[in-house]
Amino acid sequence: MKRFEHINAKSVDEAAAILKAGNTSLIAGGTDILGAMRFEILPDYPEILVNLKTIPDLDYIKEEGGILKIGALTRLEDIAKSDLVKSKYTALADAAHHTASPHIREMGTIGGNICQLTRCWYFRLPDNRFDCVRKGGKKCYAMMGENRYHSIFGAVKGCVAVNPSDTAPALVALNAKIKTNKRTIETEQFWDMVKPGSTILEKDEIVTEIQVPTPPKGVISSFIKFAIRKSIDFPIVNCAAMIGKGEARICLNAVHNKPYRCINAEDMIRGKSINESNADSTGAAAIEKAKTLPGDRNKWKIQLARTMVKRAILGCA
Image 1 (cartoon, helix red, strand yellow):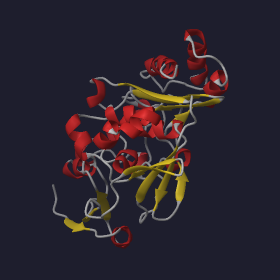
Image 2 (image 1 turned 135 degrees about the vertical axis):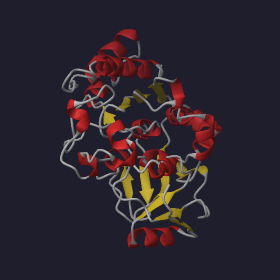
Image 3 (image 1 turned 45 degrees about the horizontal axis):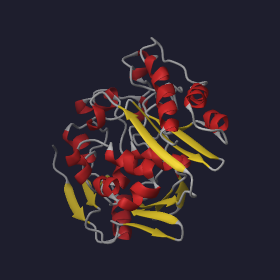
């Protein structure tokens, strides 16, 4: 690892000012950025890391005015174990519980989990060997190469990498908002394919809080994940759903460059009873627009996505 300067920020404003000034990155739990720096996967190696963990009052879980508020520095393990989150926001608690290993959940934060870089192996190869479109190059190497885990809903700006977050689909399904030092963003608008990141955050913009409206009584949410090595791995496909009282929100992830809200599927199940038949037809609706990449290596993910939607819906019964 190359040398870098480490600065303990005392406030969000101080951290934002440092970010704006130079070639800098944020660090909180450090479970993503340190690996990226160790293996030198980025085209621009950060000269400064701004530590957010030294900023007070960004680690909390509380309910105020019908909204669950989670500080950006709250650890995933605390969210997974919170009785409040488990009782009313089940999909989010389950998503946090199924993220990575127990040790990483003890270090990783909710803010870091939604801001992490893509796991595409061409992007992640050490020593920045592939100048892919996500790094400013002209070619997506996965498009015609090894793409068994890549997008089934097409490319974005020439890139077929997928969003690897487990908590992201739960937040979309629960209709959450993401508060930063500059604005409040609907979760569906939070992610995009940028170079080299995965969010629409500006250079000096920092996530400070997650806001989740309390679901009405009778509305149930669920989360399900498929990974090669169970929860310790990043998702091959995951899905969250929130259904009941005429409400239906369903979100797949790891199938597109950002969490993919299944509008067709929501229309299919909204107001209907949850049973095997309805869940199966809703799963089919969720993948109507899916297509494989050249070589058909990721064809199997389409059936997997259909099954994940079906099981997430049945989890809301």
